[in-house]
Image 1 (cartoon, one colour):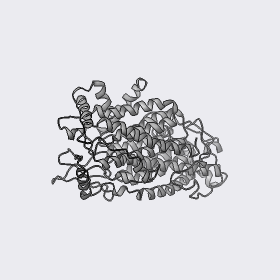
Image 2 (cartoon, helix red, strand yellow):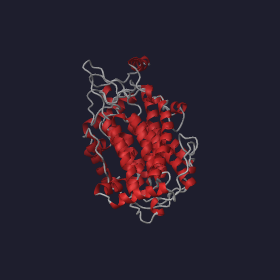
Image 3 (cartoon, helix red, strand yellow):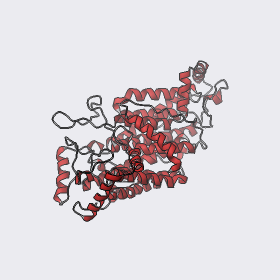
Image 4 (cartoon, one colour):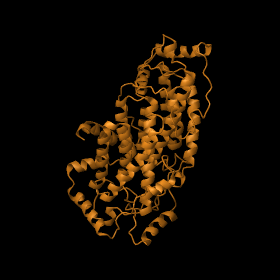
Length: 514
């Protein structure tokens, strides 16, 4: 891991700063302009996730480039380029890094802003954020790890499907970019041979807006502002005309509507449960003779999304969720659990400075963009070096984030099936080196997320597979060093996550992009 020390230090600093600020703190990382080594012109043949076929939604042919209406669009671009301000040039440079990359950063910022649990009411109960009243207290959503994993997945899938559709129509209509039609228009970002209609950037921006309005409704104004900036930057840069942009928006909204329809029926609305159901989970475990998990917060907080395990996965069906559920943890009365508890006590008393640093680097708690977001940041840093096209960026993030969402589903299914207590509950003298998550111990969420991420990322970038596996192991062991988990939680979680990651690899091998 030594070769990653500088990146890890920078990433930790970013996570810390985001976590300390209730407002959105834009990362504004400086990247070279996107200049893909392969434009993936055949991406219209790739297999989408939610769409049945790439041309499921029709898109009318563009106006001819010798038409008066099109000429007026070229004049608009030349007007911008003749009077560009410093702020406009900065916007062009910012978005030139790539739309998928920048919207992934924006998503992480939104998750960090909203990853705050509600404060209890005066009577000791806790309010639940409601999408029907996103501006009321507590503002919607509470972007905890399962919620965040699902959000990353839906936005990434929508971006990917919309881009596959866009690339289908790019090849069909083959309209050249403005700078290729009018020599007085200068490409202010790297030029490629990719047709401009519909605009891939408009597709990314518009589909992201529609998905994020659903997932982060209290931030609609900010989200729309970023989309408007993104699309205007492409016009000013000479890459798209107004009609390229409008066609991209039209296509993206149709794709988003279908993805949103899936989201509305994936059982997320039932993930919170009711007080009666929470009590039943506890009583069912107690009936087996085992000690059930309880919240150690005061007042006692309801369990976090206890029925997230019933959410519909992307990479397999719900029966496979059950099939991926590992065997039970050691009995709460067993010698093995006592031995594992003793290991946790040792770390409580004598964790090294390096182990504590690892705990904090991988903590990804309240106010951060969560473990799935942490792996998105790691992936983004490596994807930049690969010089992917926009559509391949989207495809690879979709694979990663489907794996992260499905890892969350299998992990939460396991957690609430066994309802296993954490070390701090079994021995209140144990003090963690970070916070105590408000859900059962077995299996470790960090480990499951990390096992899934390392597996699919290792497939996408084979030269980095060993490094990803080492990161996953470190993330997993951080939960033991922090006295949050037993070793069995982490070891089984890594295996469980890797199994989910293998489903993502199977999809990658059959989506036409390899």
